[in-house]
Image 1 (cartoon, rainbow, N blue to C red):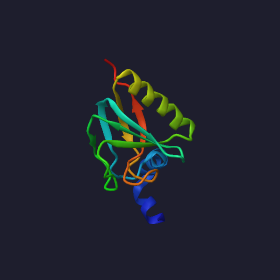
Image 2 (cartoon, rainbow, N blue to C red):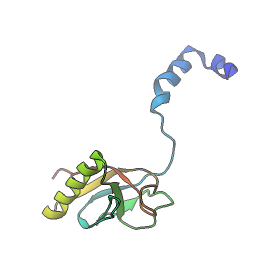
Image 3 (cartoon, helix red, strand yellow):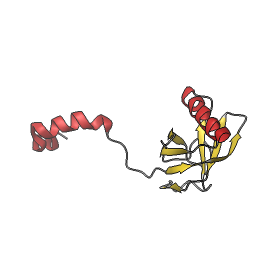
Amino acid sequence: MKACLRHLGAIGIALLVLVGPFARKAHAFGQAGAGTVTRIDVTSGGVVMFYLTSTHSGAPACHNSGNRWAIDGTTNGGKAMLSVIQGAYLSGRTIAVAFGSGDCALYGGTETATYINTPSF
């Protein structure tokens, strides 16, 4: 390790220190453009699944459920997302999934949505 750091020089080390904490593991993560919510399902454990009319692109290999997404309805963030999803469902407005988690850890075969938004009109 010391030999590698010696070859990097001061600028290289500074870049590692500044950028290193923000570097993400490279993996596939899904997203979906603006679409309407067609269905909302909730499990007794608080996992919420919602379906969009827009295409789920870039999904990880574990995802096998079409345009379905999952969120954790037991967390504050999940509750906030659920309110946006319900509002879009009831009003017929579109939402988009800007980022997915890149895994299906929350609910088997379904990528977890980590960032949703209401596109401007």
